[in-house]
Length: 621
Ligand code: ADP
Ligand code: MG
Image 1 (cartoon, rainbow, N blue to C red):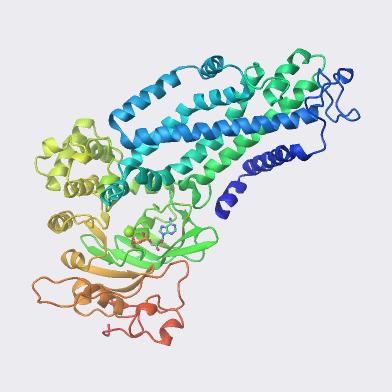
Image 2 (tube, protein in one colour):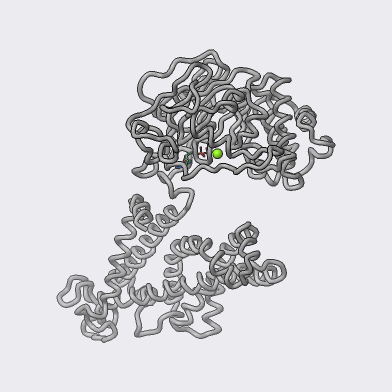
């Protein structure tokens, strides 16, 4: 809540709006106890007194009534009616929208056609028709304004509900035996509530205006009762001769609507979940770089990550997701990166091409050399040319990385054509060849499938084909087989293995499964809390793990046909990277940790290519 207020008040205009509308609301609340004239008592002798005349600070109107008193009472009424109309419209509209969106089918159809019909009428005409049918009066004006705004809420909320109703957590609630009412109230409503609040905060001002409009036309509040609209209406005939009678309510309407709209915009920005973390801005095209000190020297590898540090700056907190990682691959080599979830593998991988979202991500030190050129300091255009062309990525969930509305062939062709000038038919032929390369059967017809028509394994093959589209030198695969079953996983692994042998591809393969590393990788680096704790040739690490963490990770892999043994687990959880302990980050979970481990930073020690970051390794390296 305080964070929310802070975000709103960071926006200067919203803060101004909040101050003004709070002042007006306070005045309106206090009106009955303020020492004011009776707003409805006429005194024809005092007609049209100018502002600042004695006894009447804002002057009097055409019947000699005190303008200040009428203004405050009128404001009170206008605010009450506007806000009530907004609440009624939001509640009714949201209910209709949720019911239509949740139940779908015929219910949805009938409800939405009625809503469409309402929307087909011009706004003010509809309100006029409703008041004409019900008769003039403030209550009826309120009903009319609420009614014409119901479709707006209904449409908005229905759209969001339809999206939510198909999601897995709703299915899970249904499977858990919850009834419709409970699902709507406990699962759907909390998710649409922010949208309702946003829609309301941006429309209250509008509804106050509409009520004032109806009153202005004489259809809302009836004399002698004053609201802002009727005050304007009554002052119309004296507009030229005594302008203060219309200027006073006019300024009040302006202040109310303006401040509510400014505040509403601020609330919307602060509630938008994408804007909630970090500054109120879109992520940049490349990760922010803020390096101090000399750069590490380049090596003669194809791709080498040197002392990379990537952090997330969220408010006052600094998450050290990657804390000084060095990795390198040569052509045709496969390097495995392994570690528990949250150990910084993905952030390391995304840092290579400047793909970490900024804000909040910042690369604070280190370099990434690709063929001798530093990518971290590179211009956006240089990175864009290499992304997907020289260095390609494969991600875990191919369903979320493929566009749902385009055929896979189209997307493959697009990947090719964004880096090479080839005519459409050639791109298509190449796309078919790529699908054949990743062993998709009937590639000629499958190319016209949509992503949802393919199985998980097939989609991941398309993901790999896309990564291969421009014959990259390096592929960074971030848990590409985690979502797949073991047989498909084995096929994908052998496919990647063939590709690197045939094409001399360098692969950085990220996973949390030592079994996968054993099948595919020449070397392996073990990550924990953003740092490498052990590295070496795969077989050497598997045979004689040196770091207690590595030993635990290997013990967690079940072995088939090896007789029964107790499966190991690692006690405790990985540490939060915004508050790392001094010394070894694994010490709190380590069975052989001593005081020495917690005193100072521990270096990566050993004789190349083996290295371990441990004072008491299991095996000498
Ligand atoms: P994994 O090894 O599972 O791929 P990640 O690289 O995704 O782990 O995450 C490493 C750490 O960075 C995690 O502890 C996570 O909390 C933190 N992190 C990732 N993204 C953000 C973010 N946008 N804001 C703050 N912290 C983040
Ligand atoms: Mg990850």
